[in-house]
Image 1 (tube, one colour):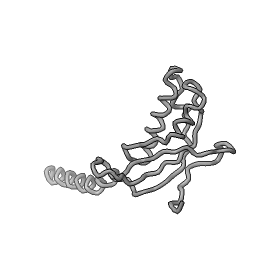
Image 2: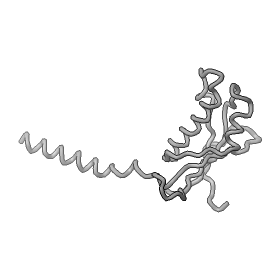
Image 3: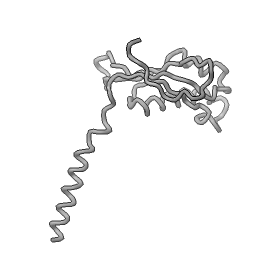
Image 4: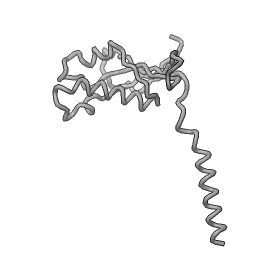
Length: 137
């Protein structure tokens, strides 16, 4: 009886792991979303001369986490927006558009990459949330 119960539990866990195995691995296809990133969290307590580079790294890390791609490319305008007030005085929040695109390079490890651009917010950041942008543009 003891052996029978043990074999049953092993079979149950194997079936469960087989069901959940493919869920995390692959991201969906091409998509574009807008996010507001709180850079103040990322740079609090950071040495002045490392703040802007740390903010750019935080944007890359955020894009990797949300889009599930390790290849993240930052737009020049976004980099200029982060560095606009100097290395020390990084903006507290920034609105970005993250596009997950197909990689044209045949030798790339991943077939998708993320491209991050800055979005202009003349009325502030209140109530914007996350928006999915249509692909018809």
